[in-house]
Length: 155
Image (cartoon, rainbow, N blue to C red; front, side, top):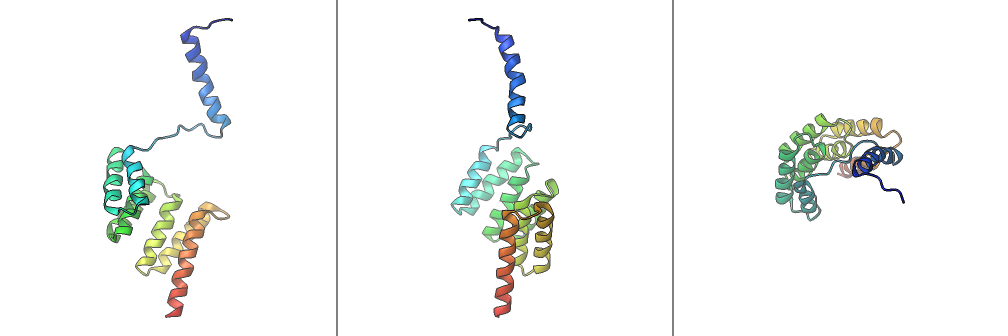
């Protein structure tokens, strides 16, 4: 059996990893979220909004360009009743990633909470452009808009 040097093995490995990523459909490195983001998600799943807000704020401190963290911070703030902060952080998330499907959905839902149907529909139209044929965020916001309109019509 032929042995190869450690340097040769590293070189082979270095060239094969990008090829494996390309074969899997992506050459972009997978970015891990900081632990604070994961803790925020766990807190949000438990509907512990104060803890979620704290952890997502820490995740933003670790990576100020993380649209997901801003989105989830805004979502947690909305759930906690702080709509002013939620609107501001949805806008930051969308400033970082204008095609962030979940932020568009959640922003649309926040607009419905304040009775702004036109702005919610605008978010739905943006999702329609991005998703081309529909995505979960589009369908979720469409359902929320339908329910909002039905409740207005029944009053």
